[in-house]
Image (cartoon, rainbow over the protein chains, first blue to last red):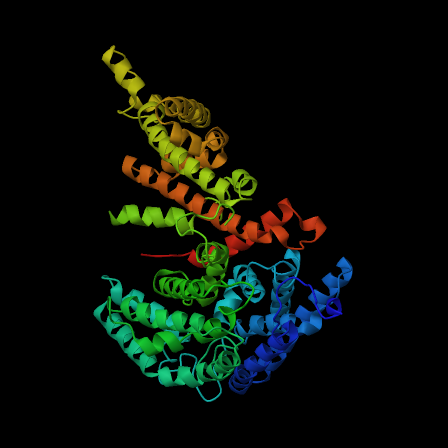
Length: 352
Length: 214
């Protein structure tokens, strides 16, 4: 009889093979090259700091889910990613309890308070990072470790003058050059320092610079990021518009002498741009779902990043700009929703 | 001109009234459930803040603060009194004078609007009387005069920008809260607690703007 062969069900009728754990563990896999480079350049600290952060994230998630008596889903890999990304966003010299606090806040306040995976408006790892940044700003901006066989700023012969990461060198030098009251010699020295860090961009690309654990090497992130793009677990639009935008706006506004003097390769390889663009701006939960929305998200992140790098109080703006664009995500989604076929173009959706 | 731009960016991003001065939290949490109402509230706040900035600046400069521009001194002087200008110090009346004037002025403007421009009156709706006695409004008036000592134009720009910053925060908040409507938020977190957690997280994100220098 026919009724045995007809199955009545609601949409969706086609299902992909991807599941949450599969995607999440693939992201973890894609983060491994960056972790390996971090451990190579900063030593075993990078290994155990990351492990502590991951354990703290898993423990927090499991504890909260057990207390709430909901299914414990710590093995779907999402808490692992939060832990890894949090550790990747702190300087390698911070005390171990700092990453524990970051993980607990990130998972507890940033994710579980909203009902768990899929409902958090902001990226949990970035929430944790913003919290520890606000609480221990000195540790978060000074506990850098010189990479194996290299110097903190990546440039040779500069650490005698300063012990800062490349973006900090750029920021300090710029304020010296632009200040009309600084002495001629100070301006010359600042120009020289900028020249040295600009020329050191290959070190940034490979990772022989000071920085956070996971952002040390652009090439390692690129390997993992391309893997995600090829497997289709991340959308190419976001990293392309983000990195492209930073290249463009960084060239226009990022220089030290005025507009259109920025060093494009320096701007894109410095700091945490690659880590942010490939792994945090592509988070499925906290970024727009529409294609147009992803372009807007990436370009918005780029503008905010360059804005904070150039005028802000911090040398780097990647994590704050992604957080800020996370806040904008519902608005972007709302205004980039594709028109439903057959509905009028002019009428604005009342419940939109 | 550049100065005005710095004041505007400062009031919108660095010292956002909600997210870093923590003023006006009551309408921020109360009216941010839906984007439509958030827009209405935002418009009302911009309107009242601009109006309040202008009026309170005049009251402050010509009625309350001591000096030769104090109206009372000018009158007394014209009548032949020789009391020094510094004695006409009514600054202790700031709070009560500002609240009274802002509230009655907004009520008056509302009446005029109702008669002359019903469409605008409808758009601002219930939000106009709601916002009138809010701490954010009093805050912008106080900052303009007592704390920062702005000129009239600066005070006006600061008022508009503070309203814009409030609207921006309100819009972002309502977007997130609409999205969270169907989220399985834990029972003890539902409603106000989660609203305050979102505000806190947004405030942390806005820390990225701290220390902006131009």
